[in-house]
Image 1 (cartoon, rainbow over the protein chains, first blue to last red):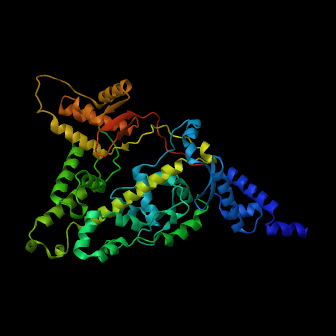
Image 2: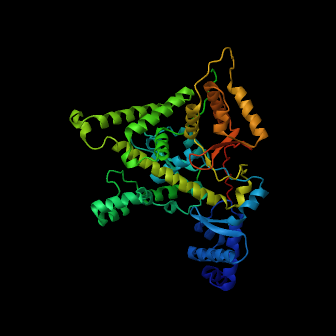
Image 3: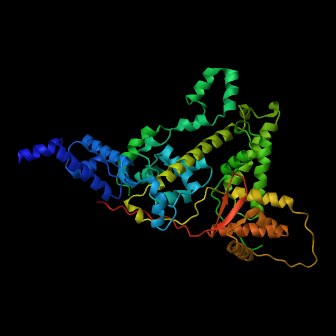
Amino acid sequence: MSKYQSTKLRGTQKVDREKLKRIIEAFLFVSVEPLDLQRIKDAAGEQDPAVIKELINEIRAEYAGSECSLRVEEIAGGYRMTTDAEYASYIKRLLHGSQKDRLSRASLETLAIVAYKQPVTRGEIEGIRGVNVDRALSTLLERGLVRIVGRKETVGRPILYGTTRTFLDHFGLKTLDDLPSLEEFIVRELSEEDKEAIRQKFGDEAVSALDAGGIDAALPKEAQIKETQDDSQETARPDR
Amino acid sequence: MQYKVKLEIFEGPLDLLLYLIKKEELDIYDIPIAKITDQYLSYLEMMKLLDLEIAGEFIVMAATLMHIKSLMLLPPENKPPEEMEGDPRAELVQQLLEYRRFKEIADRLAEKEEARSKLFTRNDTERPLVETEDSPFFEASIFDLLTALSTVLKEIPREIFHEVIKDEFTVAEKIHDIFHILVKEKKAYFTQLLKSAKSKLEIIVTFLAVLELIRLREIVIWQSERFGEIEIVRNTQAIAPAPIASEKKI
């Protein structure tokens, strides 16, 4: 009994390891949603999540190396088995359709604001878009890309919105950190001519300062994604 | 013209301003206020002419623009003290910059959505796919349509008053006509449709017919390049809202 247990606990014997790898592979095949390490570990009876991670990477390497049309992607805080992008057109033919339903511009813009500003109220979203967002918000709620995360403790106690794990999955993101940082978008706004004009007037240091992301002191400081990430990740697990 | 087209315009005043800035290649850091105000107002005029529902925000922005314009025109001594601080355009420019940033982010998200959509997973068989034309074109916006309309309206010769031409065009008839054309040739060009009309009234009715068809999701409009010719094609499959993927817990 103890011999058996210790073998399982160590999990380093080659035979066990191979079997464990295949078990993980089976899990990935069967699952309809991203599986996180914790869940795989528990169902596989393995103690060490690092071992699971190692094995998953081995599976990925195996797939990438061979002619296999499958892949294992790290998405939405977990892992999913997917087909390779190369086969998309064939699969679309099989499924009698040419495209997955995409989001409209309005929805994408609203979603972008929620993703970067969360938790955020409808009023704050409208303040940026300059137009009513009811329609877009209800579409996003319906599709499970956005959820209610609470209420703001101000007059009227307006509802706060945030993104979901489904959102991460829909865009193939690992975590919210995977979103490009806001600074990237701020600096890009200055054209090369602008930068050159500034360089001539104020010297190189001014341009480097701008490149470092300080384009305009008057711009509202965007909440760092990391600060809000924990909140939504923690409560993101059961999406609905 | 009794027919009222209830097209919900999802775009707002900021969208229109950014559209104008892009189209006229204006410098967002030094916006020619008089020029953009005039353009903005002419678009609003067109929307009114077409009886489109103009959201309150559009009117508020019009007032804001005119206020800024007046501040820019006042000689410094005449300005009320509180308005003396800084550039009267500053606040608006901030708003535009911030919104434009999120538009860029939205573009980036669209790219990621596209890349992700090529990866199929187990539950993808449960979600129906949408039949659309694989097209590299841009989806034209209401402002693009309005731009095309204004171009055509400027070009028509002065209306010739006929004697008793009771040529009343109804939107319903125009819709029928457009369908006819789309059945014969798979696509139609927007400006051509408008130009084939013989009077200002007919042009407007044609425009409204196109809007109605868009609203009914019977057609889709594309542009092969920004601010280029607008194409109209039939929507081969009604795009129903995507059902929520059933999360079967294992």
